[in-house]
Amino acid sequence: MKEENMYTPLVDESEWLKKYPDVDREYVWSYPLIHENNIFSPQSIFEISDIPMASYDTVVYVHVPACLFRCPMCPFYVELINNRTELDGYGDTIIKELMMYEKSPIISKLQVKSIYFGGGTASLLPAKDIGKIISKIRKVFSIKEEIEITVEGHPAVVDYNYLSEIRQYGVNRVSFGIQSFNDATLKSLGLRQTKEANISAIQNSKKVGFYTVATDMLYRTPNQTIDDLENQLKTFYNFGVNSISAYSLELSVRQGSLSKDQPNEEIDKEMFYYINNFFNEKGWDHTAQPDYAQRSHVQKEILVTWKAPQGQTIGLGAGACSSFNGVNYYNVHNMSEYHRVVNEGCLPVLTGQKYTIEDAMSRYAVLGARCFFLSYSEFKKVFGMEFEQAFSPVVDLLEFQGLVRRTIDGVEVTKKGKYYVDNISKSFYSIANRCHLQPWGEKMNGAVAEKYLKISTL
Image 1: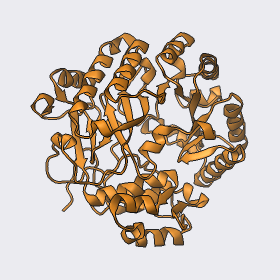
Image 2: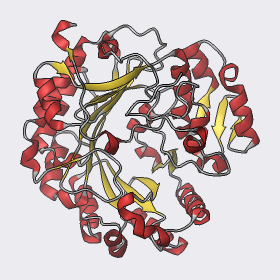
Image 3: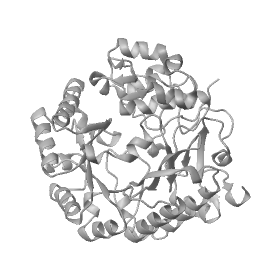
Image 4: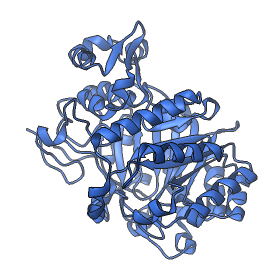
C-alpha cells in the first residue's frame, strides 16, 4: 500500500496525470520519488550499490538558496537576505560537505563534466568563495582539463567587476534570468530587473569573455501575441546569447489577477512551436525541453543530468538535490540548520529514496525523454535486457498518439511529442512512483531532519 509523505505527496491519478491531448504541466525533474514505507538511511549513499551504474559522468551542483527578493512566480525554496555578506562562511561549509564524499567507494571513478552554481541567486555568493569551491572540487576529483563551470546570476545583482572576478576563477558559462526585454512585461510580473539591466548583464558578460552566455526567457506572458514573441526572440538572438531556456509562464497564487490576460492553451501551443521553428531555422540544438543552444554551446550539465543513460549529480548546499550511487536525495531546506549540521561533521541529508531496479530502468526513460531519445543499445548495456521488453506497451500507446516513433536505434520523441514531454515522462513511471508529485522546493521550506549521519563513523 502506498504511503503519504510530505515531500512527494500522493494524489489521485486524475490529478497526477493529464492524459493526451491535454498537456501535463507538472515539470518532471526528479526521479525516483520517495515511495518506500521504511525510513531512508543516508548511509546507503556510501554503500556499494547493487543497481547497475549507468554512467560515471558527474555534475557537481552547488546550491545557493538565497535571494534579495522573491520573484512572484518562483516555486522554489529560497531565503531572503539583505546583502552578500550574509553568505560569508557558506562557501567554507560547502567545501566541508564536499569533503564528506571522499568516503564514497566510487569517488575515484567519477568523471566531472560540469560544475554548476545555481539558486536562488547563485551570484550572491562572494566571488572569492566561488573560486575556493572550484579549486577544491578540482583537487578532490583530480580535474586537470577545462570543464564547463556555470554561475547563475540575476541581472539586478551582477556588475562588470563581479563578472570579471568569477571569470578569473575559471567560470566559463553564465546564465541569467532575463525573462523579457519588455519593461511593461517585467513590471506586470513583479520582476525587479529592467530592460537596461538585462542588456547590461549580457554585454558585460560578453566583454569579460565567458565562452557561453545563457538566458531564461518567459513566454505566454499577459497579453503577449505571436508578433510580440517574435520580437522577443529576435532581441535575445541579436544580443548574441548562446543558449536559451524558454519557459511557458506558470502563474503562482500570488499572481492570480493576471490569469485573465494570459494567452490560452491553443496560443501557448502555437508559441511553443513558433519558438521551436525559430531555433531550428537558426541551426540551434534543442538539447532538452525547454533548452536550446548553439551547437558548440550545448550545456554539459543537461546532458549528464537528463540524457539517457544519466550520470551522477552530487548536490551541495542547503536545498540541493543529488542523484548519486543509486540514491536520489535532498539536503535540508534551511541554511542555519545546514551550517550547524555540516560543521558538526554530519551529512545534511533531509530524506531520500534508494533506487529499486524498477526505479533505475524507469529513470532511464522518465528523465531521458526530456532529451528526446532513448537508446536501445545503451539500455541493454546498462540493464542486460531489451528496452522493448521493459516498456513495449508504453511505447505502443505513445507511438499511437504520435508522441514518439520507433527507429532502428531507439525511441525518438517526435516534434509533436516535444510539447508533451512531461506526459511522456510520466508514462514511464514505475508503479511505486505513480501518483506522487514532484518535490517542488517552496513547500519544503524550512524542512530539517530528526537525525543525521555522522561521517566520521563510516
